[in-house]
Structures are given as structure tokens and as C-alpha cells.
Image 1 (cartoon, rainbow, N blue to C red):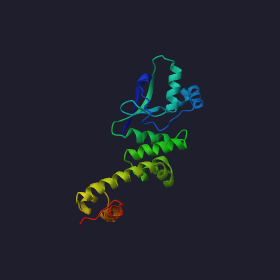
Image 2: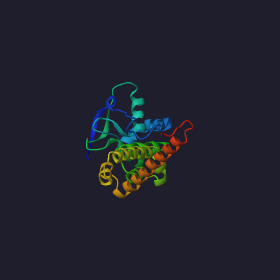
Image 3: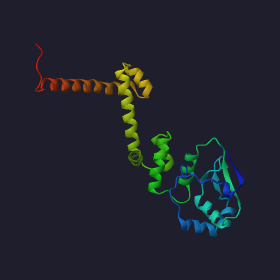
Image 4: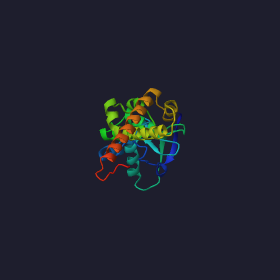
Length: 210
């Protein structure tokens, strides 16, 4: 992961809300940065962008530049990351480690975003500085849906006579976990058959065959 300081036209910087970790900005903070842009730049605090010029960090400074330019063409400096990064993760990391803190709602949204992208809860905890309980609650709906789909896949494979070992390999779970769950499938089948047989013989219009 390499960065370089580049000159870029302001209108070429792309704000992509799908990767940026903050849902809202603070107008007062934008005004504060607008009045101190020269000092900020003298300190080397430039915005950060990815290889596609998408904004990774510095939304308030970005808006201050836009306000200052007032429609005129303007060139600014930015730290540009190479294309080896996950832009979503780097953007969250940059916004979590300095500047205005992410709100609770931002962290919840970013937690879901990272989990959906395949990151483990352990990685998410470290990047967002949140508790395990917060991460568990934020991703509960997604994990419940994943478990439902996994169980349905397991059930279909079990009905198709795959072994527990084959099922475990396919759904990436331990064989012991799969074995415990397939045992419940047997019970479900038995209960359903028992229910149907009782209902069949309790029909009032049922006439035993001669």
C-alpha cells in the first residue's frame, strides 16, 4: 500500500457515499476549515483519495474547498493511495483514527458494510474500536439470514444423500456441527410423518379398505 502527494482538479474528486464512513457532515466544521485552509495545508493535512479519485478522508475539507472555489476551477493537493487497497476499509480506518469521531450510527452502518464485504468480527472490532456486543447486535440480521441459507443448503444436500463430511466441506463448517444439525433433520422428518399419519387415520370420512 503506497501513497503519493498529487495535484488534482477539485471537480475530479469523487465523493462515493458507498465507501465513505460518515453519513452526514457538520456545516460548522466545514466553515471552521474554510477559515483555516491555509494553516491546514501548511501542516500537510490534505485530503486522501484512492486510485479512482474517490474521497477516502477529508470530507469537511473537501466541502470547504468546494465552497471556496464557488464554481471556479481549482487544483488542490491530495494523498493518493494505489489500487492495492480496499477503499472502504482504508476510508473507515482513516476516519476512525483522527479528526471528528464517527457517530454511533456511522459505526453501526460501517460495521454492517465491512461484515457484508467478508471481514471477520475481530477485524471490524479493531478497525472501528467497538465492543464485541455492539458488533454482534449490528450484524445480527445478516448473520441470521446467513444461518438460514446455510441450514437450507445443508438440508437440501442431506436430502440428496450427501455425507456429513461432504456437507461440512461445502458449507465450510466443522463435521461435528453438521452432524448435530442433520440429526435434527431426522427428527423433523419423523415428526412430520407421524403428524401426517395421525391426521390421515383421524379423518371422519376415512373408510378402512376391505
